[in-house]
Length: 342
Length: 264
Image (cartoon, rainbow over all chains, first blue to last red; front, side, top):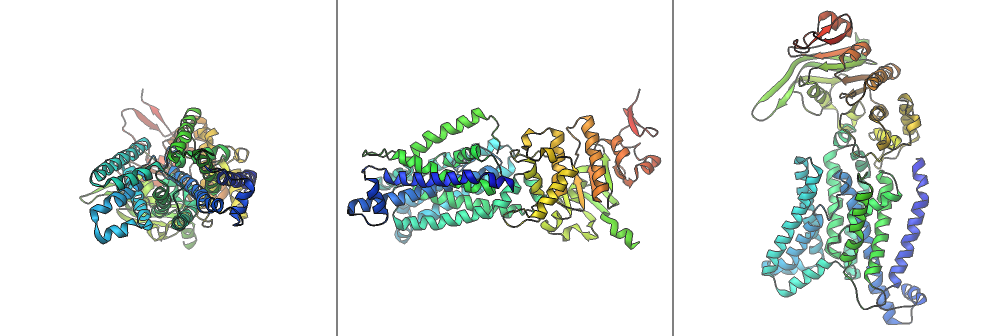
């Protein structure tokens, strides 16, 4: 266990960075608030009521959302890359996010189709979460079934893309039948946003997020065994079906809820595990999982701080920022290390 | 008699192997009877497509037997659950490990998985066993190297060390010498012979290196079209078991040298 010790310093550095960027994120926004007042507002001792409101009910939940989204997407990306033995796997690429989008689209735009009692049930925040998780779970399951038939890893990625197309097709059909308001609601959701969550929704989000994280922690040993390939894993007594199911559960809960609450956010899930491996040069998930957690949270806080365009009245869609940062990172990794080891 | 029984690690009784689908059974070989003892090195040889892999898959519970039994320590293989079987039987497969970013130590450590807790923490005992496995395979110097830095021969040694770390009575290797040059073929098989003696484990491997196997194995299992025989290499040569291994139009077995030669 010599290795674990040598990573201690990196972990401490990452935790410090996380705290720093958490405060940076909170202190930046369209309204400029002095640092001292920010600390006071956090403690609930600010004299300026509107500042206190901005900090406590807008910026703080937003920063927490950023942490949950970044870490959750990063971890589900890591889980997918190991499960599919494919360095290019991630919740977005495999169509899991699309599956979640489909679930959300059905809830937002389909509610008028169902009508009546069902509609009022469908509108609650739980229903969007359940629909999104269910959507991502179904897509993930289909990808997994197909991948057991198709050995070619590139084919799996293309299948993920196809699921994405199917989703957008179904969404177009749905949008044809739905009202302008619903359509607008869905489109705004599709831009991705971290700032729309109230404390009440954040509570629902955190509960499912924590369940997802617990499932991921449970799968650490299985993930490490799967590094050897399925046949070796079987010979080591691993219950492949069960571990696979736990991994899929974890991923669809994480990716599903995140997509439900923050919209489809691209590239974080794919890029974060690779960026993490640049520092933590290991395949051991006992180290990678917490490292990806910290890295994802930090990256998302940075992306959100940029998206805020501090001291202006404008806010960029978070999805644009993550793509602008994430896509070049993936290309750079592919070019620099033609064979991405994982 | 009973003492001899205790020495038997794996035995097959009237075993029939093959594939069964809903419509029909396709039998690949039947009436297979052999027993493998403690500390023996056993080579499994036969022509391509004769069913060596199917036999190994049946012996390792990857696929079910059509008929008859496979017994490990006198207990039917079906009665073992996955974890218990993993403590009796370890494998070295032909497939390449995808995750080559693991260090040699980490990869060998994965052999301890059946014994570790839910998150895979290595105890001091585990670490001792891993280090012994590394020493036995002469890998101690490469301990902290990444697997993608290794040659094929070194990688094969790492996989053998991983099987040793799994601490099982029986190790089964599927063609451990493919992709290796002549020197490393001999090296790997010689290493297996040494390990069988030193650790008293039963080591079964399939191979196309018949001449090397004849020189190094305690016992061989020869699969041909008509039957499957198992005995010491010497007796097998006497019986002429190798003569019918391949079609005779190209190569013939020379009983004096224990090797095949091309017909002139």
